[in-house]
Each structure stands twice: as C-alpha cells, then as structure tokens.
Image (tube, rainbow, N blue to C red; front, top):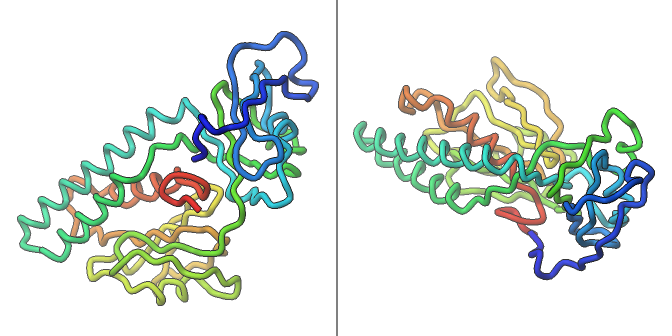
Amino acid sequence: MIARSIRRVAIAALCIGSLAGPLAADTIYIDGAVLKPGEYQWHQGARLHDAVVAGQVSAQAWPLGAALLRQSAIEPQQRLKAGVLYELRANSLYARGENAPELQRLLDRMESFVERLPVTGRVVAQLDPFQLLIPSKNDLLEAGDELVYPRRPSAVRVLGAVAADCQLPFDAALQLKEYLRQCPAHPAADRNYVHVIQPDGTTERVGIAHWNQQQVTLAVGAIIYRPVNPAVLSPETQDLNGDMAALLATQYSLGGRYSE
C-alpha cells in the first residue's frame, strides 16, 4: 500500500454533481495508477464514480484488480484473520496428536503465511470506470474509503495445501487443472475442490475431480487456493478452508502480501 506520508495531498471537492453543497471534514484516498492520486474531501451522497473522476484513472490502470479499502471492514477482517490463525494452530496441535508430522509442517507453514497478511479492509466493489456509469453498480462511498488502482500483473498464484507456493505465468489458453499440474499438491490436499479467488475479490469453490469437475475462467492475477483435506482436519475446525479463501480475497495486487 502506498504510504499516506508520500501521497500527493490535493484536498479538493470531488467534481461531480452529487457532491454539491457544503463539504464534510472527512476524506477519501485515491492511489496507484491514477493521474491525480491523493486525499480528497468526502461528502454525504458521494459515489464511486465521483472518486474515479477526481483521481483520473490512467490508461495503465488494471480496473479488474482495483481495490476498495473500507474502514468499516477492518474489524470484521481482524476477527477473520484471528479465527484463521486459531484454526491453523488448533489443527497443528491436532496433527501432532495424530502423529502426522508432514501435515503439521504444512499447517505451520500456512500459519506463518497468514501471520504476514495485512488486514486491508478490502470489500468487493465494481471499480471499472465504464461500468460505474451504470447506476446500479455505482455504490456510495464511505468516509475514509481508499481506492487503489494497480497495473496489470502477469501471473496466477497457487497457494495452500501445495508442496510450495507457486507463482505461474498467466496464459489465457490454460485451464484450471493445467495450472494445478504445474504446482504439485501436498499429500494432505483436498483432491475434489479448490477455491478460486479472482482479482476483483470474488471467490468460488470449484470442483476438480472427475465426478464434479467444473469449468472456470481464470483472470490474470487470480489466486487458486488448494484446500486441506477436511478428513485430516479437526472436527471442530471444518470452516478452515472457507475462512482461508475469504481472507485471501481481502488481499490485492498493489499492496499487502501481493505487492508488485
């Protein structure tokens, strides 16, 4: 995330009609591949398109991976991260009790990974400037919102129950299973499902076995989370994989764990 101390501070009213009237003291922030990054005053009724017009998203921006970071989402995501860490630690102890050292090492590695993930406040939102011309997609802004527009990446990541985390070159011709073949699964991996986290923060649980195989289109910048087989997890923590996918969906390209 671009540090606020090095932002171009350009306090100004957002120049769309919905912001007419006296301005509040609250602010929003626009970062990344925009022509006018900085801090802008927020007004009740301001919408996402207002921020896009004020920041002037550049032609080099990658709207699909753009992130809306929201203060009101921070506390729930702090609880989510704490819950994932608890589930991983509980399962590490469970694996030790089951005399499963290989599984324990995987869980410890995943715990170390999660500990490094920032709590971003990212929420799913449509941030493509052209799509925001559609009223139903042009959501209201909240005071303190930050919009981050990254440049387009060139890779897909495979994380979770794998021999080692992988960053693979994106190829539009490749199918999901072809990416998975390039990143060997851990013996404790779920062989039936993966979670696909698209760069806009949306997630989908996708079948990959012969009996449940589903087709999915992967966008550049996507994350494939390979779940731990629920059969080897503690019966008390069966939500681990879903919670892990939800936490990964809060990350974004320009900042946090996946910084360019």
